Amino acid sequence: MDTELLSRSLRDAASTVDVRSGFPERVLLGARRRRARRRALVVGATAVLTMVVGVGSAALWRHPSPAAVATDLRLDQPTRGDLAGDQEFLATAVRAWEEGLPRSWNRARGVFDDRRGKPHVYWAGTTPAGRAAVVLQRAFLHPHGDLPPADTDREVTLTGLVGVDPADGAVKLLGDGFPSHGDTLTGFQFGPNDRTVLVPDPGTPLSVSANPRFEGDSSVRDWHPMRALDGVQVAELPGESRADTIAVESSPAGGGRDHRTRVPLVRARQYLGLAPSGVRLDPGLGWRTGVTWVGGDPRPRPEDLLNHFQEALWRARAYDPYAREHGVPRWLVATRVDGRPVLVGELVSDSQPAQVYVVSGEGAAERTTRVGPADPAAELPVQVPLPDGQGWIVARPGARISYFTEERRWVLLGRDAALVPDGRPRVDVEIVPPDGGSRIIPLQR
Image (cartoon, rainbow, N blue to C red; front, top):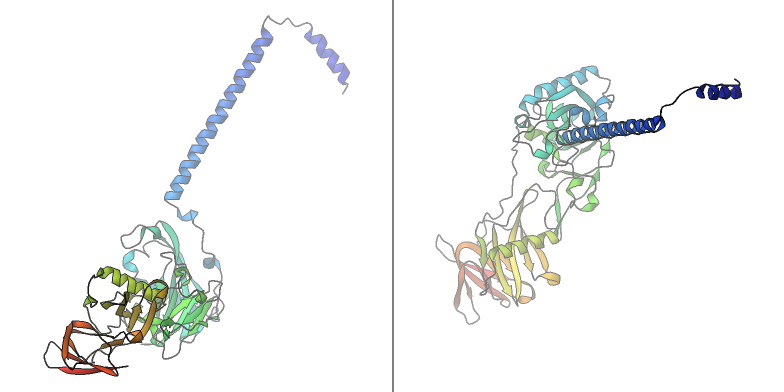
């Protein structure tokens, strides 16, 4: 194209046009108005879009839709385990899941009211307790009176264990669970005496422990690694293991102080109604006398003494941190020796026999000593020698307690409990129980 010729032609054409006065100014003004209108439209549209997005985001935050929840990737994976190719067993596992849910202890909580998609057998394999399968299914938890608000208005993955019931050999749903209270895993105990433990593999090593034991004044546990089986971790506990004291932990070195590292376990025998579902506390002496003060005035507040006793036991690691329940001390004998508090009481737990403990001193001088279990059938069940020859604390509810002095006479100390002065080489104590009669108990270090 000849650009010079085009330019000259345009100039010649423009020279013949008669432009009215003020035309250029009006053109510029119109252009400014059009530009302003375009800007206003853009700003308004942006504001409306921002408001819609903001309101929509707020609505989604308050009421998450199922589509907004990330799907559990395990639901789309092929079945794992050495029985993954056994189609008959996989069908049996799904059928056991469907038939078992109406009898689940979670049914009344509305957990299964809005199940979504089909059940998926995540794992099927051979365990020490026979064939077993882990079944997963999506569900949306709606607000329900039996569920914490933090657990509702969200989609979760239900987890169930299908396996052999030792009672009749049938394949049944042995337990189910769902993420609750921050837990992301559910483990299962099943097989004879619930001694086989299975947990869907979280991708990190897990450890299992059976019965806690005492080491000196503290409660300790021995931990053993669980065995990985292509998607799950499994362990079989020894025959002497108590099913209700088994624990699974991802970080046993933490000493049980972080609840987030524990794996909650569902016991099959409890789930099937073959074992009590409640917590069984060792009754110990069975006393319920509260705080008995034998130290003269001034008397501390009973609640302060109980708090001191419990906190001292925690500091001394007397409590098994994996126990499901610890009883508040039901009885406590307290006194003061050389200005220092001395407390004798009983630690009651569901994971080990009740133990009598002595807490003496406070602060840096505090000392916690385990005496051991007391004999409820003994004439004088509590006979605790105090250190440095400071005497004895003795107790038997309802009994009048006296001691025989070096001047060879009996001195009444009180009822229920007493601080008995030390004697060399021994001191004799007389107790008169509520049913009458008199017993002489020699106290000898």
